Length: 398
Image (tube, rainbow, N blue to C red):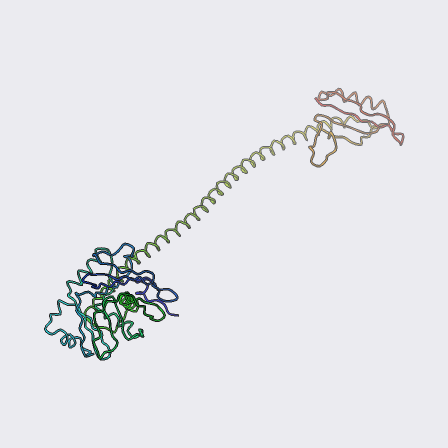
């Protein structure tokens, strides 16, 4: 698996090529938009219009532009040599020329070389016109030299551009002026390219591959423009990435802060609730303790009182009377589940048997005389199955 280089990432997947050419003494431009997709290069948009120093707004100025100058301001000559030295080829084609004033590009064929030159002032002026429109030129080629990128892939013996014919037969003149009234399509690696946009497609291909068999000062200048484009887009995209990373970190911090802040709030609320519950429990415990003390005091007092009363009653019981049950504050009814326990306050009930009715009567009278007794009520008196005299009395306390 191959990974894209940093330069290809900076250039993106869309490229625009523009050819400036002269047709009938009028400067025109051919514009081509190429997209790089999974299936390969795809032509998305193309146009050919007169040039008025402005590029139409329909073209995205943020994309990399490859510029081809093929106007009458570009001079092209054929030299019957493929000398490796640029200086020697330039001297053969344009002797006594001050090269500080010119850009040049050399395309070497099998037996011939094509040299295209233009004044630096002219090329720089075109580049400035683009920069004023915020268009960044990422590469430049002169004349028909860009055809070097696709020359071997064209099967036809003659290639037509917007205003020229280029022959593959080097034993005759290679470049000649020729204007077709109709367009021709060339098949390049299964991609149909119209002759009117063949040069700009070649330039875009050079931009994508970042290589060329050609040489010359314009090639060096193109490399500078490409590097400058990459640097500016690197900082622009790098700044966006840094901002995105910072925003992402801030977002994560906000998410974590919100999450833990909610947890902290919930914990604080839980602590407050627990604290309040503990305070309530403490208060309840205090109330229970107070009530327990009161109950203890009350029970103690009641126990003391009941013991005193029972002793007072019991010490006067005649020997002829036998007690079987004595209840202090007896229950009103039997204890049942989920029902309140009800007792009869200030009441003593006594049951037993007697052998002497007289002794029983005297005992009752003595009890009635007690100052803490309100009244004594005989609730039962009679014989049982064993012929014993049973009795039940209810003593009401004051």
